[in-house]
Amino acid sequence: MTEETDKPSPKDFVIDVITRIKKDDTAFRAAMTRADNPQTEYQSWRYLIELGSVDLKIDWQRRAYALVGAAIARKRPTEDGSQSLGEALKMCCIKPGEVDDSVDRRFRRILACDSREELITVLRQIIRYLQSNEKVSLKYEDLLWDILKFGDDVKRKWAKAFYPKKSEMSEDDSDGSEEEEET
Image 1 (cartoon, rainbow, N blue to C red):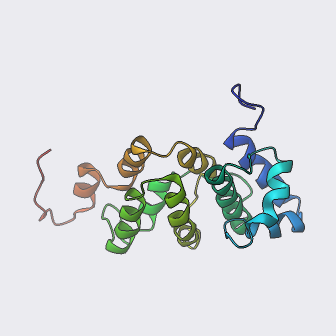
Image 2: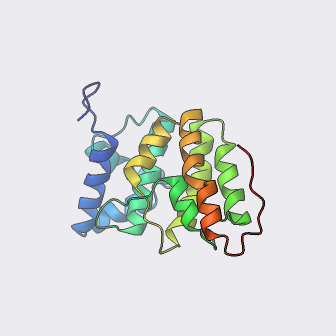
């Protein structure tokens, strides 16, 4: 529990959801799987309240927890992953050290978000895309923290993790033909 409130931290929430999924609580998993859909989100409210994680009256907060809970319920991990959002998207690139255009477009769409509400809407499809890639091991706790604290600092953190550094590009460049950029 955090000191500021009696609500569990995002870490506690992620651990609790993973634990319930591992116990094969099918009613819980079914409700949480539908939690990121605005039309069926209400089915997860019981569980969000049980977990003590969210004030249902705060739309963006409720939707953030519902989004991450739904992602965990669909993926059914046995433990939290290890990759931030930026690192996970980077893993979806075809060639290591290079940014794939389709992945870059998705990433730039995330960076263009101006609010948590918009971010949550955009992330719904991006998380499904990430979960379709077996190389991706998304760290749900960090994702939830990032949504809750969303702003320019979070965007910069994701960008730093996503875009390859000059050293990564030169290591993967076998013929050495690319021009070096000045920084």
